[in-house]
Image (tube, rainbow, N blue to C red; front, side, top):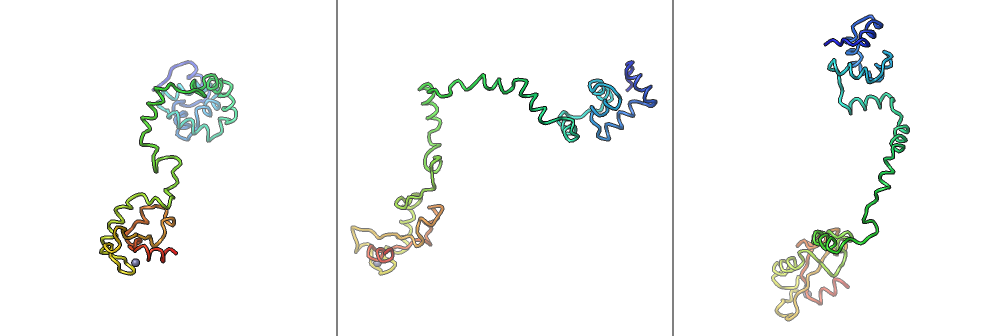
Amino acid sequence: MGINGPKYKAVEDRLGSNLEEHLKQRFTDGYTCKEIADELGESTDTVWYWLKRHGLSRSGSEANRLAWQKGHFDREATKQRAYDSGFHKVKQDHPCPWKGKRLPDEWRSNISKGMKGLRVGSLHPLWRGGTSIKNYSFGWKAAKRVARQRAGFRCEVCGISEADLAPRRLDVHHIIPVKNFANIKDSNDPANLRVVCRKCHKQIEG
Ligand SMILES: [Zn+2]
């Protein structure tokens, strides 16, 4: 596609060869629009237009990357320009309207309704992984039941039956202490449980 503007013609005459071919060559060689413009002594806008007319275009991000790589942009200057344009000031002039204020009660209650169930137990930001020793937490009841059944409701050390201990039940002892587990559930693994009477439990723990 030819371009018949007088400027185009003038540049082509000065160049002494086909300008379209020249532009194509420079473009495929990875020259930026600015570089081509500087070489031809024309403005970047003009060259950008010619490239476009010849179907030579890069995506904005591609053109920017190329220009950055070649150091056509000065990072500090760009930052300064953004600052001078008042970009930061706009932000400062419009702080959050609710900053430091109490939200209307209706909003607060809606927010807390929305948060319900999201901040309890292990989901609470202060949750430290259930380190309390007394509260065996997840699956402990079930784990005890399974362990007592497996032991035939007898102390696994001395053999006394649960019936003989009534109304007291057999204890279920953690062979490796709960505190040594990152996850309490893991400590309740049947392999880690031993069913014992109170007396034997005291001896083990003592
Ligand atoms: Zn016992």
